[in-house]
Image (cartoon, rainbow over the protein chains, first blue to last red):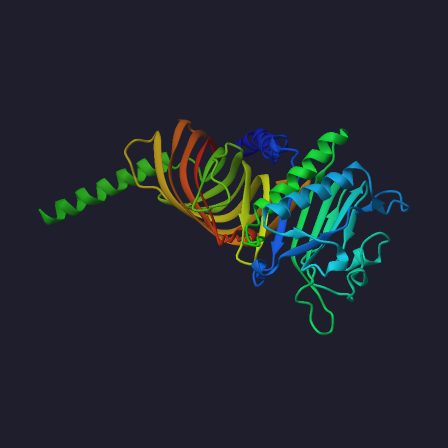
Length: 209
Length: 204
């Protein structure tokens, strides 16, 4: 009886205090996550020239959205060019046999989606390997999962100079800038630009010097 | 004279046993305590946590020993400002994050109680051995990395009961919890924490 008198309030107290404490995620910033993967065997000083299109592949909720040519694309491309110039690389036309090719894509997705290696090549607007004159596949380091209302910028640096005899090319650097999107376009764009700059900052290997 | 000594010894022993029988007016101890923990020995997080508790049951097998079961739980979390994490394979990730650990050790517990003349204070040393369920989660932006596993746990402890009534006592324990739970993403091979328990115990 004594045990019962003790156990009842003890169990009530146990239930009350045993609720697992949830972490405080309000502390997290809204800045996108910046992930890069550099080919540690690549000799970035052996490259001198690069080409990047002035348009950006786009994946959105509307299937007919395949490419960005607007202010977003211009600013993102300009940011990549500024960083490449700062690292000692020279922009040339695609017909001038650049050492490096740069693919850039933007995804704005409002439902859960996972992008697997190679998937991009089936998407209209994304530069397929034939754009560079070679065939699929080249090395892709990871898949990316998009969840509700996320924005992601993907950049691939492709080694065109050392394409093998069978015309296989490899990605020597990949950057993924991703996170939740806010409602303000300028804020989202600035976060994308900051993310690209951070991607280069955390990749000192990408340098012609 | 020798016989007198033996009689004296027997009389003393009987008196001591009588005292014990009065002292041992209970057989079971049920403890419920608030547990504050201080993680140590890992690079996953180091912030202490007041979010924990412990429920334990001890049965006295003789005046100085008890055996029983215990269940504890703890939630740890810590915010880390933005920094770049790199590995040898050329991968670098820049983000801020919240890291979380949740532990729930379930142990068989054994305690030794030295005999004291003071009946109000009942100190003890103990050892818990069992399994620990643990989750180690990382939250960044809207993403998360989750891992959970079971590990072997050893928990030495020292503490005391302070009897206020024949069937009610306060409980104070200092413990060290070592568990083999792992976290591959952060190269962790164990989880360790110091704990302070403050609570109540029913004596039945």
